[in-house]
Image 1: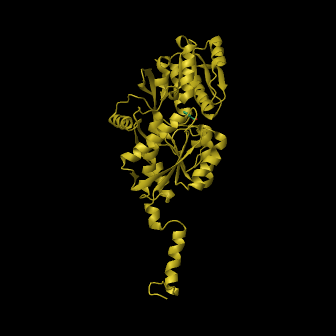
Image 2 (image 1 turned 180 degrees about the vertical axis):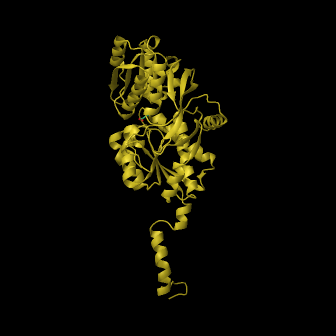
Length: 396
Ligand code: BEZ
C-alpha cells in the first residue's frame, strides 16, 4: 500500500458516510442556499397565444436582469415547456417541470384551462406556483391554495368593470360573444353581472370553440339582432381577427364593441384602423405616464425592441413577487413557509400602479377605462378603484 492510498478507519467512515450521503442526495445544505433557484416557465410558444407567452417571459426576465441576474442573492435558472394552450396536455407538461426538472417554482400560464390543470398538480404536490396571466376565477376562488399566487387578474375583474361602464353609457341590451372555455365564459358572466346591476339586459350569449376564428355566422346573427352593444372576450391572434372582421362587416359603425382589454392589448399594430376608438377595461394602459411605468417601458423597449403590454407587466410582476418571497426567506427557496409569507404580504411596485394581494392571492387593483388611439390603449381614467375579486369559495 502506498502512502497516498486512503485508509478507511472506523473514524474516517463515520465522517465520510454522512458527507457522501448528502452529496448523493445532490446538495449540501450550503449548496442548497447558493444553487440557482429553478424557475419552470410553462407558457404557450405556439398557437393563438404564442406572443402573449413571449411577452410574459420577457417581462419576467427583464425584472431579473434589472436585479443583476439574481433575486435575493440567488441566481435564476430557467426551464421551459410549450404548453400549446392545450388543456389536455397540462398535467403531462407540468409534470415535466416538477418531476423531470425539479423546479422550485412554476410560472404559468396564459390559458385558463391549462392553468386549471397546472393548479391541480401544484396543489397536490405543494409546488409554489405564480400565474402571470390566466384569469380562471376558481384558481383564487374555490380551489385557492396557500402555494398558488397570481399577478394578473381574475376573468371577473375587468369584465365586471366593463359591464358597469357599458350600463353607465346608457346601453340597454347587449350580446356577448366569446370562445367556449373558462376565460370566455367567466368574462361574459362578469360583464353580464356588471351590466345587469346597472339596469342592462342581455339579449344573447354567443360562443364558438377555442381557438376557432370563423366568426362570420355569429356576426350575421349580431347584425340581425341589432343590440345596443356587443361585449367580446378574445385575445392574441383571435382578437386581431375578431376586431377586423367586426369592422369589415360594418358593425362598428352602428353597434359599439366593448371588451376586457385583451381585445386590443398587444394587437393594435395588426388591428390598425379597425380598432380605433374602441373602449375596453383593464388593469393596465399604455400612457399611465408614471415614473415607474415610463422606466419599465423604456427598458422593455430597449431590450426587446417592442413596446410593453399588459402581458409583459404581469410577467415582470411575477418576478417581483418571487423576489419578495425569496427576500423574506433570506434567499432560501426551500423555506416555503417564509417564502409564502413574504409573497402574501408583498406590496408590488408594478408598472400598472402599486398593488397588494387579497387573502386568496389575487391582485387588488385599479381597473382603467381605455380608448384606442393609434397604436395605444390610452387611459380615460379609473373605471373601478382597488377592485378585489369576490374569491367565492376560497378557504385558506
Ligand atoms: C385566459 O385564458 O385566462 C386568458 C387568455 C388570454 C388573455 C386573457 C385571459
